[in-house]
Image (cartoon, rainbow, N blue to C red; front, side, top):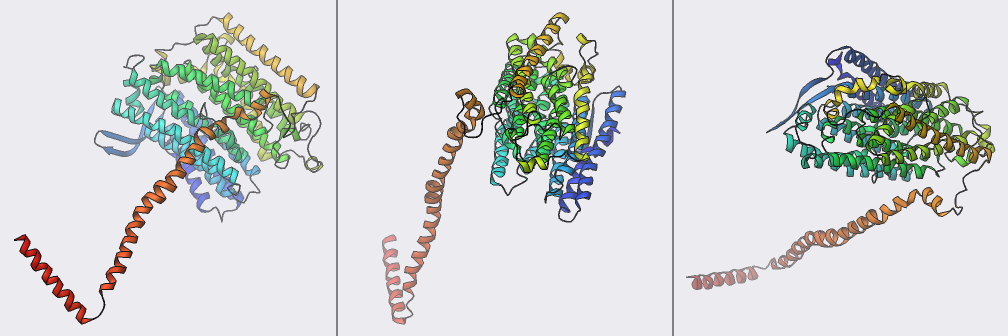
Length: 635
């Protein structure tokens, strides 16, 4: 079965071709089934490979499909790497992806671009599979660029609205900044190791000394790539704007898969990163700073999707914090649990928006738990999970990251706990504003309130179950578990574990850390309940003057405006100068000048063609005299 791994990405590609070519002819029912079935079969194949890999003694296979690039010393086969990490990512991509495809059948049913939408989704899944299956950095980079392209297509799916096109362009351009760093890192990897294949690069890297300058440069460049794709400071501003796309797109691309590509890439390259302690410290600091900064912005947002968008940025920051302190398994674990509860939250938000006839402002919601019972219960469970309450999935994954952070630096742990408290507050603020109190929308909206159809609620229920039980795959020893996921991923992090051993905290310390975090979360929830349920407070209406800090948070600390003034406007002015002065007056002036010179010269030379024989004889005599004079002087 492992030899058939190439079928897993091929099936979504076939789905893309069928829906793409037949987008104007296929019935919606056929387009939805084709798109969803392609992902379902890929999920079943991934599941079969997972069980086969787990049962076998060999934990890593490289499947070479064909010789691809061969030039001088550069040899790059088109090959796939099947190991515990890539198979786990396949299960997340195809499992969560299938549920989102099914949900999309109901959510996008009335859209005129239905088949085109499913074609884009299938193409995205194809490129994401290339990214995680590639056995070398070049194939990974193809998938990396491919998901960026699909993100552009899906964010700007409703391209008739210019603001959606602007959001798509912003995502595409900001990702290119990070991608340049990734590409330079790949060039430096080849220059250093003479190869780009994981099987050759990572073992050789393990022979370098810790703190090696070249490895530090390589890992910093790769981290720049991860910063763009996984929306970390300072390249995070594209992700909140990406909420312009359909809500299921947010669930798939900006919660469960694409934005986790940076975490996957660093985890895959852990053998190099553990030998670059400076880079690891940078990753940890950027991660925790992003987690807190995005959480502070989420505190005051009133658009339900924007709250979840900044929540995603914050949770990705936690994953980078884990990577920076050496908790590679913990970061991958949080990546998995986050895929469950964040996909559920986005799909739940889509269900709310569907019921509210497109309304996304939480100030105009309220009291929806009676009209949307399934949506309310599932989103509440996901909120418990993301807040880190036991026994929900987020508790186990976030606790593992925080425990490693404490061992690395109590300051990082303290900042991580602050982020967790902020997360609990803004997530329950969202739940209370949306589902509790009286309805604040229009009479027409209230009249049309209804629970979503089954093809939308069933994926919510499945993801809710995963959000509840997903954490049990890696219960820590302190709670009597066997850390199954840690042992499953151990072969992937063999080189890293030589430099970063497992937790050495005693059980008492771990219990105290858990207790402090849980107590803080409960206090945050109580504070949110008091403010938005007991006191029934509602965020101020648009245009209301806010206190300075609250206004700064609501306006996203003016980072977009800062980028506009520091980068966009100067670049626009520079491009305008080059257009008007260098291009139009300079280059065009020279080119047009030659054209005008030829035209004017031909006009004057044309006057010599008079048509009179006498003039021609006179010109001939003058020419003969000139030739004789020149010949005389040259002799």
